[in-house]
Length: 373
Image (cartoon, rainbow, N blue to C red; front, side, top):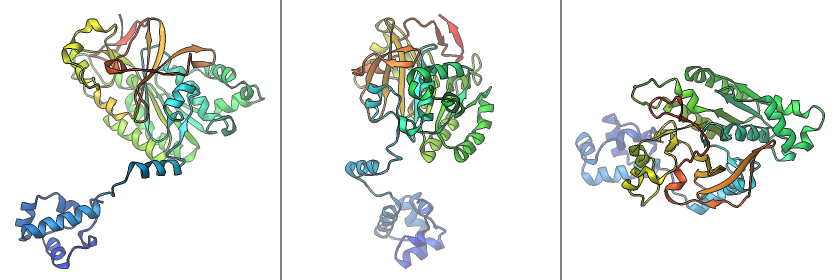
């Protein structure tokens, strides 16, 4: 809209001619100038310039919509309202159906907490026939750390969906719908993005999983080097792919230690005092998601997996449609299972705090590398 020609704005011919003579040919050309700059350049009065800019702005600005009209559009458009069920009833209800199409959803947690287990079951859900609640589609699974296990995938499928996987040949068919790529570096992943775009166009792909983004970025950091987020372009690419292809994209992220300054910057809650954050004795762990604050703002939904006093929880830490909730879960032969479907409301700083009882591996804040505590 910004590049729309001035000649199409419906301005009085005298003003349009003056603009054209001064090489002001698009809405962007006109709106990039202040009123006084435009007065001097076009030799026009303030009233004429103000009226012309208001007219141009009205023509190129998107129309206002009410919350009701947006809700009606969302209900009418099945694609915009689409979700991939996780199979976890309480979490699906909190997210109004599951992992939403068209956005990037992030799973954050320490090593061994269950992020890959979550992704395996989600991949199966996407590949299931629609009559069984799936998307009857293919999945692209970016397996950065070689954690993808075909045997575990089949085991989860047989335990979770026995009526399907016990049918002759169905286990092989479901597994055959999951396409696994294993880039060895961020550069190799970047090169594979074009292949991914082609696969999205040529095949019925309805889910993209990247496990994990932090592992891809770890090689971009050197000890003692300034921490520059190397993934700015990548998250923009993923967000555009999710939106244009109308598919859910799920990425996993690791945790790292934090400083008191970072605790302050990562606090999204109102009313928390800085001195409270600097008093680390109040917290049993001092972990944050890896990849930085810019990445945190870029993802639409963040789910945190953690352990407190030996019990595992999955928290809806960031979501435009759900309150902050935590669900206790366990990992069984059928994958991740909620212990109950009633979410526990989480308030204040607790929603962004990552607890890590029973896990001994974290990522050091300086190098994004694994260290033993």
